[in-house]
Length: 379
Ligand SMILES: [Zn+2]
Image (cartoon, rainbow, N blue to C red; front, side):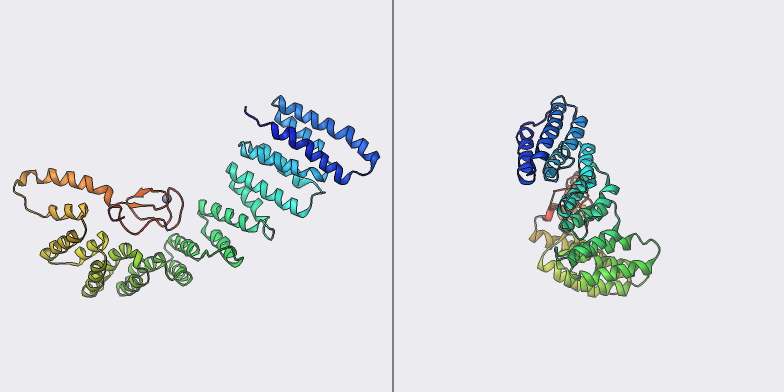
């Protein structure tokens, strides 16, 4: 096993020397300590050199038992073990620090934080959570809350995640309203058959983060499920104004709600204007879904192709075209569809992870809102 001894060889004597200089003025005690501590220290070093690290920890703990000035040595040792992936040993060192009665409050919090990091790194989330919760009200609070937030997200405990996000916002550690809106939408999605509970959550998310697309989309979907297509349509037309960057996600449900509530002409106007401003595969698809005249659908596709060299739309156009060698058309179409498929995916802007559907939180890198509402071909 690799072990960097050099810092120990230098660091341990310096820590002892400083400790003694600062606090050992009583000569009689100095003589006593001199006899006892270095012996334990050399014993520890000897164990380390023989790669008997557990015995080494015992020896070091013995060496610094009654000397508060050597807590730095413990911290250094604990961090070293954690970095080497020896979490059990790191935990032992930090727990010993915490058990010392002579530690200052500041060092006690520091040890508590170090212990939490040991558990986090070791993947012991329950114990990490306990350790992190004890850091509330200390100078490590913001870091602890962020770590707790990550734990709750990983375990999909959205209520607790929301609690942590609220505390972070209240403590002035940043704006977590967007995150909070996501947690509320996740809770709404997990509310099962309780439509009233789901809608209350979604409406709260909408209030907290009015510019976000997700709460509006979720509300529209709940209204649709409740048979209120007109209500869903109103929510979505408003959303198309307030969150134009997410129009690719809004267009499909908007067309569906418009058809169900007999407001297709109004939806066509909204979507045509959007398509005119900036062509989008999803808006085109929504327009096509609303259009009853097949000739008009082909015009829309051609218009899109005039502005964007889109293989996806070209393949859609060719699919309805009558070709001269008709018997080979299915073969050509199959090849085209195969080539087009990867272009219709969504891609995470943070890590590049691609998926067939849009994610609010990337399954690859766990980032929120990292998927643009446009297909790979349009990026
Ligand atoms: Zn990602």
